[in-house]
Length: 357
Image (cartoon, rainbow, N blue to C red):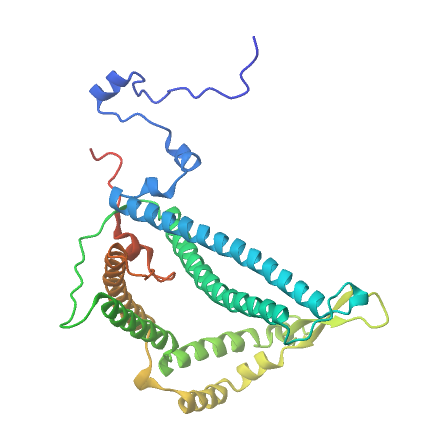
């Protein structure tokens, strides 16, 4: 009998193996927790049914867009072949008789007719090329949107669960159609993104810069303090701190590198004239400080949190309007950088503890 190369997993935890017994004991049977990732396949399986349906719909739209791109490419290639055929015929009609041509003038009806067909095909090629670019861009947007959504599902933090968000009902302004509402909401989203960029670019308070500067000067001063104990205890010269620096070795193997010890003059200066150095740096910091517009770490975190919450709310409205517009047949697509939570209509919550039934 052949030996099974795979080790057998034994039930050593005292859990019932019979399904009926498992039900009686309140134990849900299934794969071991460590095997969940290996068995995970479709991202839609981790989503609530309405969100999974949205993801599948996006995939279908992406597949349809890809088919249109391929079809447009094939049609364009066929048209290019036809155009080359017209050019070859024109070349032969105008060519010398000794070169297998017909030596026809440009105003000959056969030449003008062939030229007219070529011109017509060139116009059609331009039209199809522009249409192909539009279809290709739509496919690229859908592909990026789908990938972002799938990546978000796969990277779901541990200990969380994806559930449906409360329904969002965007309100249209008086006389506003759905496409205008989408653009209005997207404009508001761009304003919020600009707010995030402004927060990130905000200066830091000068007091924080001065505190860090003093800490740095203190560290340098301590490291540059001479060891006078050597002169008292060992009747030796007072040693000064040094730093190791790499040096190039000339006229040798380029891969060789050497090291040398040099006095640490910056540390010695910080020890000898620390107060003067701090005073000078205080003046420099005051020259470039912008405290009225400065934000501390806590202020940045709070401001960013508020703006991101508003941005997510705006994107939820945008996504719902785009879904509705698509259902009505409008040629509009989701932005590829939209938050997947807004796109799928979901949110993250803390997963219940395994011991909670």
